Length: 278
Length: 266
Image (tube, rainbow over all chains, first blue to last red; front, side):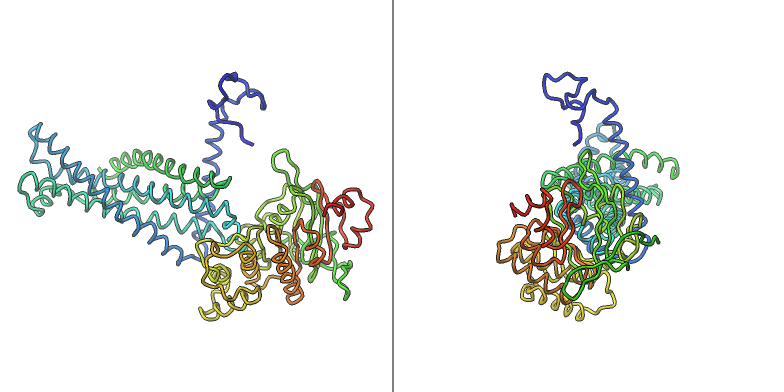
């Protein structure tokens, strides 16, 4: 049985003494954190080893491409479109105030393709796909279906984890393209409603001075988001314990942790992109 | 690969009684120990099962019977001790190497553990799709139908696991366990939670399959009547140890207090 986390003692209980297990270890939370990372590393290694050795699970992989990619498309497109509108309205207000209205198309294009499209896609997919994978695998785990796969001499790391993680890695950049396109289209539409501006003018003006370095690295960084979302969701799902409550915890922690790590990874990746693709 | 040492073996006499023959048993566990935290569940269990023999493992709840089965098929790792399948030790095998050993074993889970997103047919076809890739679609379909007919479920191919009863789920689980024609069958509480008629049907089915396929089987159960019906030999576990290992008559003749107590309440 695990000791309760620090800070969850019953009211009135001395903060430094655990009645059943002696003094509280102040490093307990930290050691659990390190243990989680260690387990995640072992899990990742097993998935990599399973993914590069035959037999390959193509059918399940293509099923996951559809599940993760096609079925996330409407949500990602909607989120991208909403972002484009909001960005257009906010940028118009700010740039008009500072007398830089002519920069509006470029501001929208650069904001969408550099940051808003990728991060919105990452967060939307971590919510939809992270929760889905976490809950599905956790449910399979608590009902012994993953054990049954293993007992049937099928490697669950290959069948369940590698296929989902690879599908996430492949689909995130493609979904990002969709989010970018929708964001730019609605960004233009919002501008056009305020004052006449053709799509051609908007695109020409927006992409003036832009090159592939502005477009490719931010789009492909979402493959890393895909790795994070798939890896964490599969890991949290396949290590679940404890019935329906465990399934709920796995789904929640998959979303929370994958969103958190997507945001943290974005910080690092933006810095690296600025260094290597100035 | 390790080879088996000092683990006795048995074969069946024409009367169905096991006897030692000094050869290699289909399945052997030696000095198996396993703890969860402070709780010792297996405390040095050694057992062997010969080809064609059925061993029933009995005991109170929490005495490590199911854990032993999970260790045999490699779903749990023992703290110490060893498991031998046809004379090959399985300790330290990688997942894919263990997969080769697992192809020789069929496992029926206590709650059947059917894949809930697949139909009955897809559940039984699952091991064939992954290990008999040379089979055509129609050959696989025929094989699945034959397996389901063997367990009396041939009319339910398109049903989902949630649409069939617990007894039917166990039948489908059994068909899935037999799909790769294993020579070792592990059954975890095959009659638990079933009404007496369904239990009797499962017992008859296991007995018939046993006679037809001549597998080495280990059946974990609480049900003494079921154990008596389907097993050649019974092993009674208490506090992680084998208290007695013999025929039902050996259990009846035993003076061991726990054995007498167990028989009295069964």
